[in-house]
Image: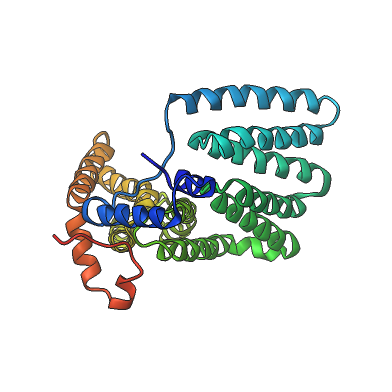
Length: 327
């Protein structure tokens, strides 16, 4: 399968005319619209060589960090950061390997954050982490980079707020939720820029949705009291209604990350309810059986359910969403 990066490389090298590449992308987009634009494809592993390279890179980076850390702990972080960039130049920029790209991005940003945090504190480390993620994106265009940078930025802002205003710690749940709203809005914007999901922008949106989901879901279910010891029928009913609402949003956006993030809370709420009514040993099993069966049915009927959901939305909004296949 020819990736978007490979098409760009072929155009740059003069092997393929830009108009032909555009026509090929349009053809692929048409195929996606007719046979699977709603499957949330993303590239993680291109072959076992990806795993091999990740293992070898991990050994090298641990060794480099260990040796440099003998002189000073922050030096270990700087060494890992530099080594991650050098490895990315070959395995990401030249070889276009998916899994090493993700791992080397994480080690680059994480090592930069670690080194600066030791020298200047978490706020400065967050700023450097965001700057590093931006530089990495400009150089390598790894889709997960935007989500990583957003995560580091939000952590830095939240830390600065709580550190500067101690009373803000009491509103940590609200801060996390608002952070999730911001990331979710950014993810929707990236999605809207590529409704057919044929370019790298759709992959960027995927990782942003993956980051936004727990930030949105956890504070909401925490307020409801789903995870408390006193959770009962009311909390279970509210959890079910929330999950249905999350399912509707997931269908409209054609993104499953929100449903996956909320799944644990729903399982806990209903298994606890069954245990309170005498199903001590089978509470979780019965809950998992019912919810798992429902999710499998939804997966099988996803396209039809999504077509119905999207059909009731305003036309202006429908045009910004991934195309839905008719039932």
